[in-house]
Image 1 (cartoon, rainbow, N blue to C red):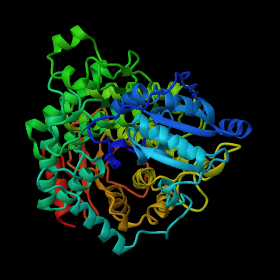
Image 2: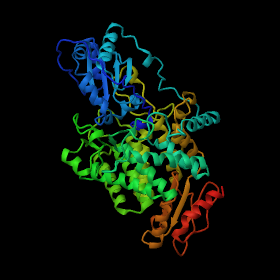
Image 3: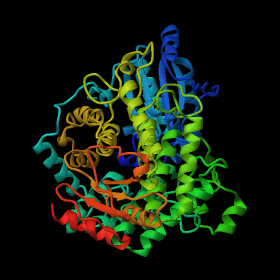
Image 4: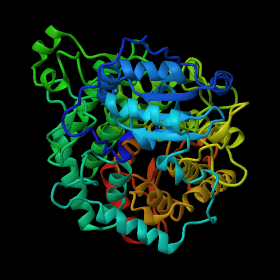
Length: 598
């Protein structure tokens, strides 16, 4: 998810602390960038005997701006590009298909391709002008693909139907080993909360793992250093292990992940600092990343300007900041980002009971349905998409709808989630294994003839489809989850990469969620209080149903409860269910007791 930027290895090499001056070169015309990406660019490259230079960047990315200012303005670089290259500039946030393919390279990503679509070079991070000039000339002299592409794993390879025991053990060993015992957090260079790693820590903690509790709380505490004390919101990450060297861009993805995770932490431990963190993020979202019509924007830049970089700007108080101006907000409203925000707001509402937050989540969902919906249940990314439909958008909205169903008990939201997954199954299912990030465009060449099946997206699909199966009993959703697992099963644990998302998908596929059902009319204050209490249950893998008999049976008709004279809650886990609970303040204890009975 955009491949989840921060989950990727963020060790971008930025040189030795200085940039050597390029040799003097005659003036050259500015690079004739195009934003038109697709098969036509390769046809043009073949006609004109040129290579394709793809610059993938993000509007919030500091080093992307530096590369524009210092590398692509260099006369020698301009001259070489003008002679033998077609230069394509793409905002990575706008194209989940390219992000799924190249997200591991970080931003900026520089990919050079032959006219037949063969990759020649893939580079991540800032490239100083002398290095870029040398690279461009070397490709002209010898366009043989280099080592950066020689060992790419074909995206069409699929593993067995299920994850093996030994692979799962190895993934867990890596998960534990990658935790930084000295500074907290998973990873040894860049510091941020990896959302799947934290969710797994919560699940392990809920199962009684005291070490997981320690890992989770130390990381959550350290990450408080990345929350803006003035405007709220979370900076993307710290590039030093002490958590005190933030990169100041604020991505909606980061806000959504951290809002949801601090809400989960508050549900478990009741610490005011976690509630304060969640409230701070929520306040930032409302003030800076919400459009007048209720949709959510993508990001806010790290820097106000070259003269006013983030480190100086964000050290100021509110009045001083506003006197200088406000860093640019990317005002696109993508389905994917809105889905992430809706899901996070729902969990914040569930834990705090703040009705206005749920109103905002519903408003955003209604906006997406009105402005981004595709026929059949899927979603466009933007007003219009270059490719697509993209898997990321429909997964994110499916997760959002399922969160809204849990938070409201309204069947319409569950129906929307089912439609989103039905669209995915109908349009993005690969016949051999898993689900593809985007369809292959007509006329695609080279590597672009092979669809991408991203691990993180298929892990998210497993979790979404499995939970929908639990809610509805529809075996087609279970089959979709098992089909996505085939992609996860091909992932080698020998890479040493963090794959908490695979561990989460496997755990949830193998067990029933914590399940609370409210039996009573939705107009009944007693049933309303029980539902509110059920939403506060500390569980990341949580199913909450509300059976009002006037609406017919529960969505999963295999689940039945007795009709009672007063509203009641039933708490179930894998192997046990509680007796009816009539008091709202006893719901959480009933859930914990049912867990202990397993």
